[in-house]
Length: 122
Image (cartoon, rainbow, N blue to C red; front, side, top):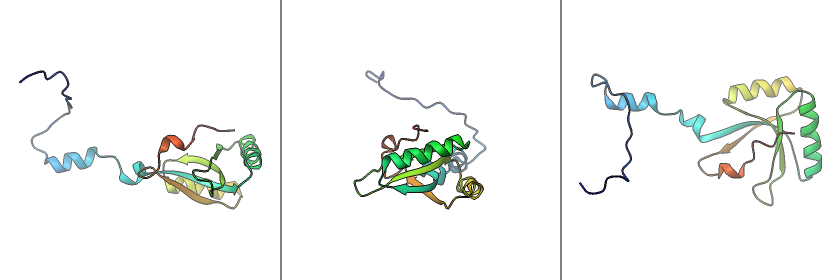
């Protein structure tokens, strides 16, 4: 046992009466929630200023709006509301806006979420 200072330890509560797989399943995050970020998209455009103006108007109306920048050159600027914890909550919000909308999700397993700016709210 030489130089164990670099080892990592994971303390957790263990009950020998519970099967290990059941314990792991209860503590695991919901795969659907962890795998995507859910938005209500109300518009998409190639004009950054127009997208920013619409998002600003939605914020003035009391909505949590932002603009998602394109991830590739052929994608538009997306005016979105959210993010939301569930698709049901996103759909309910979309119905209350009175605007045409669709649900837009960002797959966190294939996209660098640091590149998705969710903090820039107008």
